[in-house]
Image 1 (spheres, each protein chain N blue to C red):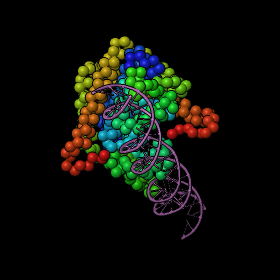
Image 2: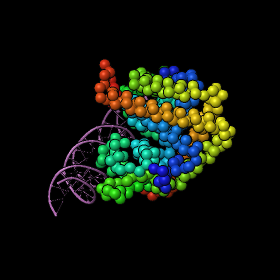
Image 3: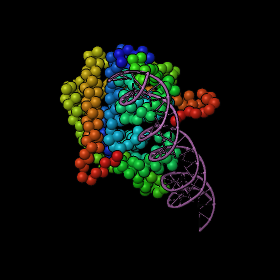
Image 4: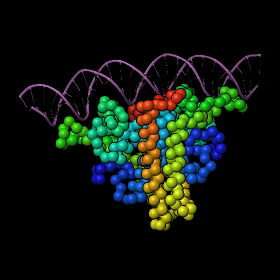
Length: 175
Length: 175
DNA sequence: GTGAACAGTTTAGCATACTGAACTATAGAC
DNA sequence: GTCTATAGTTCAGTATGCTAAACTGTTCAC
């Protein structure tokens, strides 16, 4: 575990900053994952719900575009989310063909407890910093968030050019 | 995005600290996800690889325990990881029945570029802070990481007790 | 050495969720 | 009012990955 040589990715650095980032990132991902399973959501469904939360209510076709799924798959996806109470369908009053799919719905007791626990824990963390220090942290978080978003875009661009330019004969690209 | 009303979970707070946390969390998850697709890994496979990265080389049965999969499924999982060059099998020299499965292997050019981009971006972020400020950030990151881990454990405990005793009157646990 | 226990692989059967195409209902053009 | 385009649903076919159980090879007790 200390020196496994060919470790991939973010580990394998001795840089304490990188290590710190890795551990935070892992913790965030694990928390997110735990939350998903607490909600009874598979990873793809949880991801779709995240899109709805972040970007607000949208039509089924918009959700299809954002998730990369076909229209038929989105119907099933929204069925599952709605059945679990994590999202709801409404007709668009302006165009009654159209749906408005919104995240929300009743929060389960377990989920509420999980968020309460997180809130309490983070309040305890926050209490250990002065306002000036918290401002520094906020600045760092903001810059880091922006950097991560840039990297996500960069990766998307990379993948797009890879899919376009790479003349893979079998064409068995993205999953 | 600004006012979506009945948003579930971490959004919907006016607390700027919570909002900040949500955005960082989302960005981390998205980055992680982008990385996974860049590596050609499904979410479960990426998760398993993360376990291997974090916890170091382990036997197939240990990986089965950690992922909650059966032995047969782990064989398939490791097959996929190995085929993609993300992990490798080795026989345990002490017990030749046993495998040692380790994360690693050749890093694809795309992946290397992604990490390089992240490293560069984070270096630029870091450059905007004094050493004293970075120490504050490090302290916050450490505490936050610990809090998240505690919450993950708490959720796991919650789920375990739910699965065992399910004392909820309506019993509407969405499996 | 022999037999039981163990680690991992293989295989059959099954569940899930995707794609693509037909279908229903609404909107907008004429 | 009719015709075409659009939004979403339903359905058949398919791919993926899981579980459970049989199987192969290794270790350990005796």
